[in-house]
Image (cartoon, rainbow, N blue to C red; front, side, top):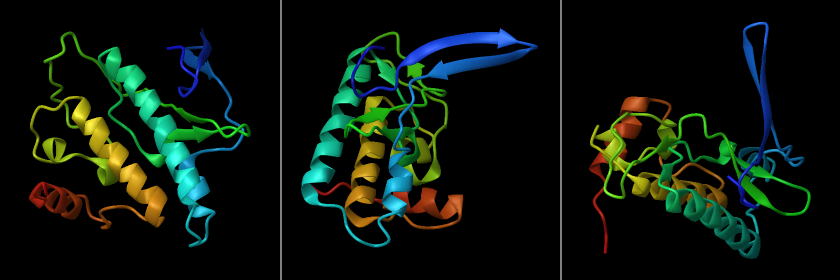
Length: 165
């Protein structure tokens, strides 16, 4: 996928039974590390907005191609020295065949799981949007939206949330 906010695939090869994948290098690490290096000092709103827009553009690009990332999290958002954010790690992504298709595999990182996934229901691109909201929350507060060391607790908290309109 050729997009300025997606880590580019360069090449792959197999050697001695091992698969090697060569990807674009993002020299500033990942968003998770940047957030942790803030040491409690909130990031400027303008930077958060810039980052958020860039992640949105990457998600729009893949969703327009009917691809679910399924593992949106700060560890999979990479930074370059030019201020560009790039979405990476498509290892568990899924391509949908039709606009109305739903995925069914319970997969992803606990802190970013949508209610549909927590309830073992079919899901679509909206689960990536939920995870994007979790990333935005993390950028603005420097902590996870749902905090627990136990997967069961996270699932119960997320499953019990009711939408507020």
